[in-house]
Length: 80
Image 1 (cartoon, rainbow, N blue to C red):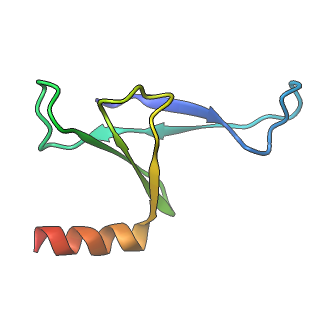
Image 2 (spheres, rainbow, N blue to C red):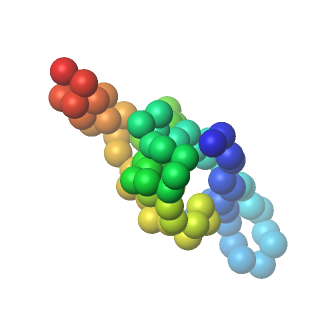
């Protein structure tokens, strides 16, 4: 899965003023099965890694944002 999920900046007004939309490119874990099992998706950004449950709807799923340094430390623990 390599979808882009667009969202409006929190600085954008609701009346059509100056708006900025940003996108996250989500990647499903290679350990996730295609049978709807337990799946995790991540969207890397320069300063944070965003994590979500792929079984949830992409536009309403809760997202956990982790600083990249913490993410790399976590990966070092689970891969080591």
